Length: 445
Ligand code: PEP
Ligand code: MN
Image (cartoon, rainbow, N blue to C red; front, side, top):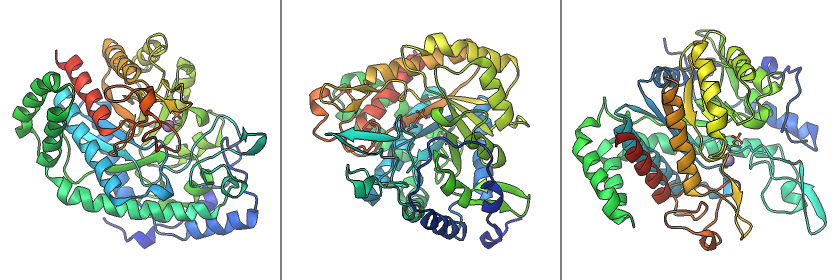
């Protein structure tokens, strides 16, 4: 039965009693201000409710069984200054367009999950950054500090967690309005996919596939490539003060949920078995994911799976493979073989972005579309060769016309013109759809 939202009591006291070391956390300079922010968040309304999270677990169970395909994507880091209605609408729409193409490619229903409404905390490789002889704390995402290289911006400010909470609530509200309204007709996404194919420099190449997708357009709808009106929200569950404060217990079941988003994932840098992130994630009942890089060993991965998904319920745990085009063929086959042989019910999806980051001659962090394509193609081959299901993609992308990755319409020299990301480089809409079209060709020919 549906419980009123006010009956979701804060579980912060319980989940914050952490004994284990937490990596990648800010040093808040003012503990009183931190406690005040955490108390305010603990008294705030949940952004999502358990029933929605359970629905996503059900959808991801279909992915784990090989009966659905996950399309997950969005900004590397959302920015409070860049919260913009049109941009949110374009990114939500782009995910639906990709779902249309991948759904056709796989002949499967798709599940769409945005990196949105909460993707405000970033793991970093060093605690400080030095520029021109000045050393300041590194930028850790807008939930922690500001991006500008000034002492004022870079000093961690716990009040930012409240700003992020409110920005996430507003973003979620708008997305629910868009996907439940004008975006809810599948022909909306299909029409935009066709528009992309006709405007593409590779028009001659893409037109044939676009025609086939259009012809198969009848397959969209309630049982089609995505469920109209449904777009779930996800982010990296990195900042434990924020996540713990927004954890609530569902009185109907007594289970705890992160209510900051539907799906949370553990990043590559915080997945230690004896770390606080794994401890927190083991306690919540949301569908969760964990990034798996090229150094993960078979035994380590099995232990992680058993810790995070002890009951082995399909849909509970998604593994997001991010190895790099040059390492995936050596590192992934044994992992998929072992996990499959040991009968663990997980969904395998590919993040072909994070193992392929390079620095351009202009100094910008970028990624070559060729490398992204190569890793994604290898992922499909490897997972299928092991008799498992390549269950989806996890991309950094935006509906805005940025120049952050190179390939298709953008070279190194173009990067300075429209580079807007405060963290990693994102695919623009043409690059995203180009990737989906190329993968479709590989899969259907
Ligand atoms: C990210 O998804 O932005 C990220 C930091 O990824 P990873 O944990 O895989 O490095
Ligand atoms: Mn990133």
